[in-house]
Amino acid sequence: MKRIGSAAPRDVAGIDAWEVPGLIGAELAHHVTPALEVVQRLKAAGLMTHSEARAFTDAADHLQRIAITSQQITRLAHGRLRQSHERLDLAEVIRHVLDENEGRYLRQGIEIEPHLQPLEVITDPALLVSLCEIALECAACDGERLQVWLAMQHWPEHALLTIRSRPHFRDGREIEASHSLHWIYLCRLADATGVTVRRSSETEFVQITVEFPRTVKQLAGLTAMEVDAGADLSAASSSFAGHHLLLVTRNTETAWEIDMVCRRMRLVLDVVQDCAQAVRFCELELPDMIILDEAVREGGFEALRQHVLRRNLNFPFLEIVEADNVVELGTWHDGATSRVSRSELRNQLQALLAMELAKVF
Image 1 (cartoon, rainbow, N blue to C red):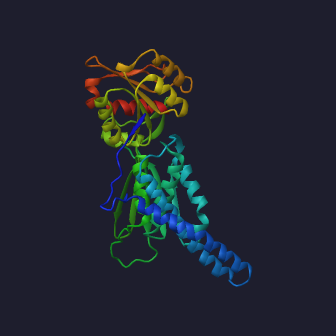
Image 2: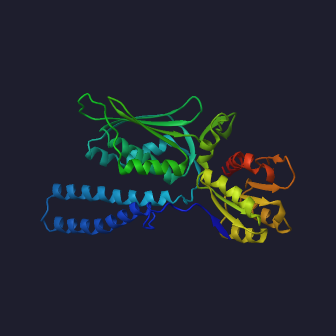
């Protein structure tokens, strides 16, 4: 079994450039905890006032967040996060973040005015909490008064989280957005979750907009994931970043072609040589989708298919066939296998993967 993936960029010294933030964060974290313990001992001994201890603790907490953020930037940059994509109420997540950080916002003099519509999105819960928290942190770097809106964009129907930050005092000059560690972290989180982040500066405020393409709406009592047929396919498919695919093939050219598509969609791809290896692989870790080369479809395929369908009736399979001009989609609820011609992989695979991965939900 081999794992296909792009190598991280390296500088002339042979050091992965994205390792540097993580190394700095680890060093900071190593020293912050002992410093806090010293403060607690000094306060207990009456050698430090409550206000002095609070000031030092706040500074140490800030350093701790910098340490965690730096390490997370390195982790996200490597791009191999396992994500459990779920249906989540985005407004509730934002309220949770506001409630959890209310005390810190008050101490920092940050005023927040939320205007939130109930909207549901499909994404990883932990990454979504981090995304909302860091978006607010970024906005707070540019002003102490935050207005937070969550609404549905009319076309395409994407959820828009908009945060405007205004300073308490201004001199009439255009406010410049700060390039902080939080902004770098926010951009990496956006890449990992397949959302779009924009920032603009005006005379009165700085605005951060986070656009969520994978929204959920109710249609005639059925839950449907919104797919904008007019949207750019590469942007839409990026929302599947982090999903795990297993390819069963001995054809190196086919493996290379599928790997190129997976890189564009930021998918994790593993390759095995036959169905027996695929069964053993799935016993250890079930992927989100299996792609099978017809050339290696032998008796073991049915055992593989039944093994997977016992755990997920809607599990997506895609079979690569030798026949020309074949593009067949299996239905959502009968476990049928979708099929595509080997000659059509270049033109059809990205759209097929996006539609098949939708079955994961």
